Length: 187
Image (cartoon, helix red, strand yellow):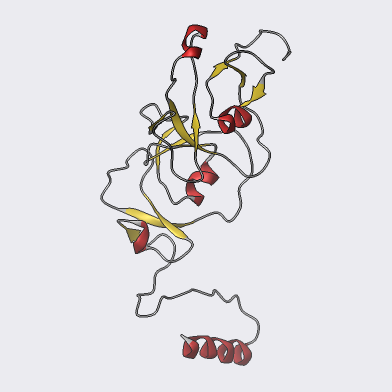
């Protein structure tokens, strides 16, 4: 590895300015570039993940893609192949997960007061009717941005209270009622 770096420096010095691409090669590993074929994340270099074709989680082959370093808070949910809803594509790719379907997961990884989500995930519990609020409402696992959330629907906690944005509703991990559009300003 050190020999390759030294040769690159000598080449640049001898030939003048050129664009130099630095690639990390694991000890004993083979050289891989982004877009190399893979079957799982471990087939890719550090900082990459094995991206399967959209909506084809069981595809035998994917391609190595770079994981994003930081993500913003736009509400554009995507369902990952792990059954978890990610607040946006960037968060899903950062976690190294391929997309199952656009939008929140329809067949999600379930959670409730007994079954928890993995570390760094939240249990988003939605009561669809007010009479469900007193029950143990099950939810779905979500991943949220560390930054401020932008956009999305608003919710009211079961039992009443101020309406909150989608990120606050998810983080509370308590049953929420979705606010209907046109129902007036938040109290």
